[in-house]
Image (cartoon, rainbow, N blue to C red):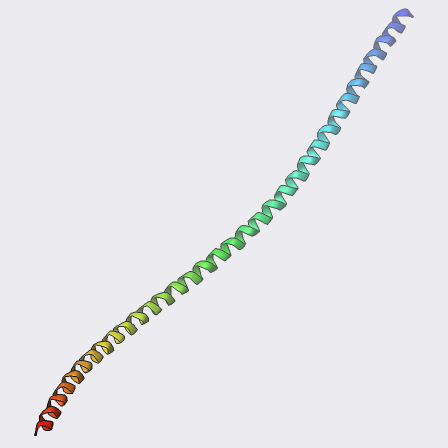
Length: 123
């Protein structure tokens, strides 16, 4: 009977130890599940943020393409206006040369006229 009591006592101790171990492991499982849930939430948050960032990258890329397109159009227009300005400058130079020629001829004719008037005044 003592052996049975001793065996029961040993079994009770083992059961208590096992119960204590089960409680520790249950607590550890709960902690790990909570940690896992936190990490899942963090992954979800990061995934959402990643998606938002990808959308922003797409928008930025669209904007960059649009800016490049507008820059190319402006560059083409600038080239056109520069050629037009050069053509106008060439026209201006031609008119200025004609004006200078005409002014020189006018001065020469005026000189001849003054000389002729002087000669006629002497007559």
